[in-house]
Amino acid sequence: MTTTAHAPQATALYDIPGPRTRRRHLLYGVVSTALIVGLVGWVLYLLFDTDQFTATKWTPFEYKGIQELLLRGLGNTLKAFAIAAALSLALGGLLATGRLSDHRVVRWVATLLVEFFRAMPVLVMIFFVFVALKVQPLPALVAGLTLYNGSVLAEVFRSGVNSVERGQREAAYALGMRKTQVMSYVLVPQAVRAMLPAIISQLVVALKDTSLGYLITYEEFLHAGKLIASNLDYDLPFIPVVMVISPIYIGMCMLLSWFAYWVSKRQQRSPKTEAVEVAPAEPGTLLPGGGPPRAPGP
Image (cartoon, rainbow, N blue to C red):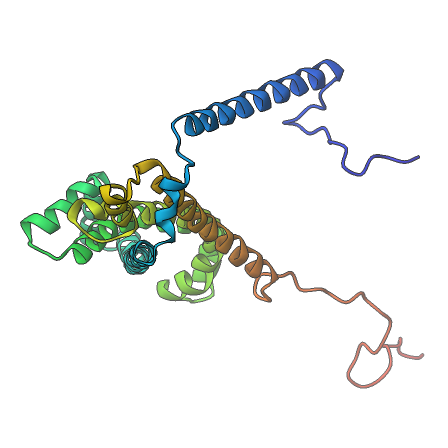
């Protein structure tokens, strides 16, 4: 008797759909696909109808000056993101350590900072640092991104550590480990895999929020696109610029997601996380002195 290799299996939370349900799901899929295709076609029609694909509006991208401006803006975006991501991870780890502290005062201070910076809008913090503290655009942008994303990552780290089974912590303390050792060798390595998707998602948010730098005249990628689109000499409106900039932003976000997937797969192949293969039991020497034990003679 043969069975289909990829046939759905019924579980406590899932019942195998019947013929009518499968036909209904197929109808939903066809209708949804038709709607999406229609929407894409309508958008393309509007773009062609407004002459967004004419050579006049796309030829300026061949100019070396515009290409250098876009590359310089992209480099500034990646620079701000790299600094903000590193500082956000460090700040998140520091605040999470404070929230997990056994000292009440340290825990209260860390909680107050996390809740305050997490509730403040990113743009407000960027403008405050830029205007009130009179800081240069790049440090102001990095400071705002770090304070907000660091406070969010602190909650991610704390939740990840607390998600590890309580028995792991108790077993480590029973072995005589100190709290630092328990965190470093037991809790954090197990929590990393659970925290990784949330960490990457927050880093994607930080990458997209670097576009707020154009509001404080930081010459990042979106600011470069705005300069090009507002240059009347080239007759280049905003839509072609958006069609050039948007895929690059999407590609960078997808690259971060791919990196998270690669790290996750690497962790699964790591000797520290792989199960140890136990050799099957075989007859052999049981005592160091020679053969198997024998019953004493009479």
